[in-house]
Length: 371
Image (cartoon, rainbow, N blue to C red; front, side, top):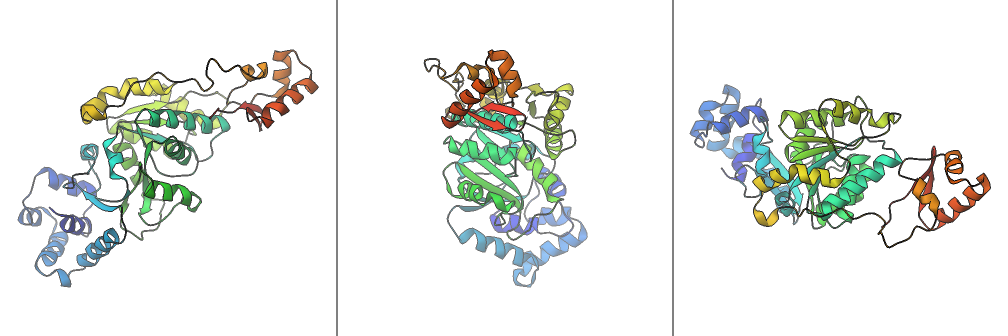
């Protein structure tokens, strides 16, 4: 089937992705087999489009998408018969029949990891998302997420900044930027090498709450595994984790403080059997066999030792740095552990802040990652 035919099938009334997937599994001939397998209303609509396209309501949907595709470079309409179609999606019971794509299709050839999390991350969560995304991107992994505020956007931006690749799956039309605050990230994903934006909804479709859980099945379905960085006990990130488990994909969660409300969902996932990820290497080791199975040898991700954020031969400018991490540490604790006075601690922290080593956060001081 060609692009026009897939667009017509996608626009059929009363037929969803699961019903279409069931028909595809039967390998029906076009169009006779499809007409025989579709319910009455959908079959009539398809018959009219096949015989008299100009009289069919389906033709408007087909023409609008084809016009969008030809409107600018880097636009593609993906479907099962397209050479760039991600084969991992075929394992889902309800893969999207069509995906509108904008950007670098080469990203779909990389081993993929979904990274999801809260829209209101802590400083530690932000730091962890950046660290994991950056390191995995440098090792050849593509970071997949939903371009949402918080962990999603942080991880995707870090992957692109590291010179790696990232795929965003939207819960709206391909030409609708949601959330609007991510306009810059959307442009990078659409235009930069290694960036790709996907949507299962036609151009012009505005975001709707019901679309996001559906979007999540594509985020996890595109990915060999899913990493939850920070998530509350009731969150969309846990929905993504559940979808990944149902899809037979590996789920990873980052451990965090028992007192971090934004990470309670991760602790819940760990109790339910998710793999603990303390280092990007944990994920690479666990998923390497999947990457080898789904990708040709030339594209297998290299397994490299993780580089420390501060090289061993670079001395720390102040011993206080050894007492700090991405989790805020109160100055009282620093005074007690360092043996300095409050005034001395404050002065030393001020100098470190000026040099870009530390920052003041709610609850104390944090150590910043080095570039």
